Length: 482
Image (cartoon, rainbow, N blue to C red; front, side):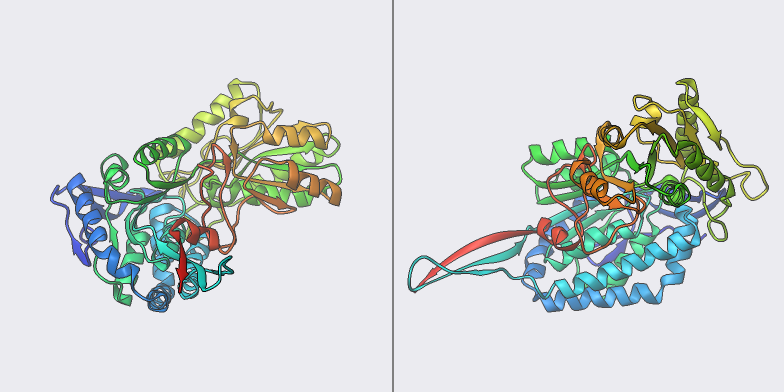
């Protein structure tokens, strides 16, 4: 293990004065401490915000093409280090190689995408009602943006918040999740090497209650983007809006896949298994409910159980499904499994800790399928954030949509059907910010909006693509008479 990773503040790598250290362990082998980070204080967070505020004006007036050049160079530096970053992500978060490598590539793609977008920002020209007048808009950065990101996509989510914020001309403070901050710090290293001016990006590690609270509450912060649990997100939203700040929150999900009687059971099982067991179920868009027409229910269950039992569970470097990130996450998943059984759901497969020398010390859990699930059970209502799928039987399409909407969340939803009319009805009627037809609930394109309904989002602003840029800019309308 190398020396403790430092914070990045005002263009320098610095230690926290607290002297506290955060240890990050390998979830596949918790005895292996992968790296250590600063356990920072409120004062460290304040210094970061002040550095961003001091740098904001100069960065805002930096020409868009120059901002884009820096983002493009940072993306290229990340690409040069792709394998190193993949290994770091596997070690800290536990993803399997294909997932980790794909996530790193997504971060690279995001920086390259927004590097081009930086040159397009400016505004629009409109036709005035008066003669001798120009009428147009100007897009300006909001100022200082605070970004608070989760551990489950530790490089992709920081990238999709950070790249548009910088492209739009904002200065930024970033608090990555303490469980897996290493790859976010490497983004800062790449931007520093690419020539980002001092103070434009500042990264501070530490607890949400200390660093995060200051990043939200400091008077110099103009906008806050948070991804995490619905409970914490609601507190962030209330604190930010009470202070009159611009805020977006992307939160939890209880994502359904509705399988109609026209679907092929085997194909539907593939879609559900990929959406529910990929990333060990630790995605806010993971499929946790399969809502299946009674005519193909039994066949679907058999196919899904077969897929769950065929998954090779083990350390991320050479297996199909890795561990949960921590003992707390594993315990939470096992608690929900017990709750489901106590409420009367039938355990079709999984439900325990796998056996074998490779998994005996890590935070591993078996891919789990419950059947005979009622929509009012906690296993069907609450976010588990593990590889657990609840299968619910319905009698027709209308009941399927009703059950799909019968949760407090509305992030991602999919339908498996060969009936085009049903597909169109599902798109119109399901309460979700992301809707897919004959596809898994997980997986996002970087150039289209992402966000949820109900408790899955603040429903204020969307992320990614042009929508992401919109959050980090504010329009000024100009009436220029001559």
